[in-house]
Image 1 (tube, rainbow, N blue to C red):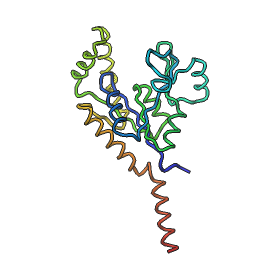
Image 2 (image 1 turned 180 degrees about the vertical axis):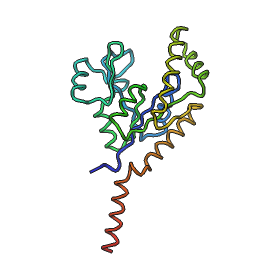
Image 3 (image 1 turned 90 degrees about the vertical axis):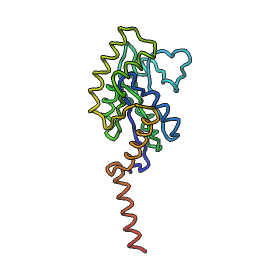
Length: 212
């Protein structure tokens, strides 16, 4: 039997500098019913990082075993280390009624889309490319060469917006959060998502009319 109280899977991605992380943090602070998925990785923990909080830190053998067990919604190898989204954790939280956020890159989001047909895919856009450039510059961690590389990548990444269900322009964090909250509420009312609940309600009403 389908769980009528199942949560909604929300996948958020967009170009570097668009503000995805800040938006997700603000969403979690405002909405205690949201759960942000923690990725798994084979890289070593950095100073101050905690297992199960920042990442699930796995050995390469553990990670490969979980790939073989089909326990990732998506995974990739980046500079010799594996990164992935654990399927079992996401599924468990959704079944408990939690709305789950995945903040992942665009390629990962497209792989999740193949495995999670009922997911909601939201693309975060900057107000303008000039604003995006200024946000990256303000980080102060980029050389001129790496800045241009990131900026060119962002131009390419924005082409993927048509693969998503929704696009939210991050003019201000508060307004972007409000729009995403509205999207989540609208998704919870979609007929194709709750049709079995509607049918059960209809059958219950008919039963009451027959036996009143």
